[in-house]
Length: 78
Image (cartoon, rainbow, N blue to C red):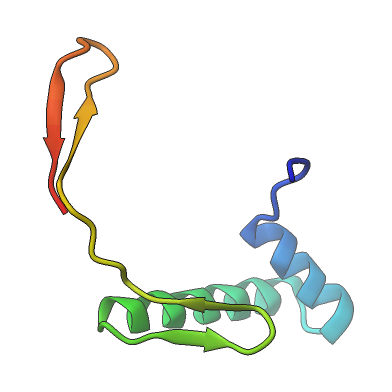
């Protein structure tokens, strides 16, 4: 892996080039799609984008983290 990171702006630019919407409309479309995915996950729904990915909330146990400034151990709650 490694290399370039794909950003929202990159996605909007790709929509602009491939679909033919204006840059503003493309950015709004990307933002609307990402917002809908986030809202569905917050509602506890699974988001499945066939042939791409499935997103869902995973429960995790408490773990110990470390404050990078002080080195103090701090519990990270689920």
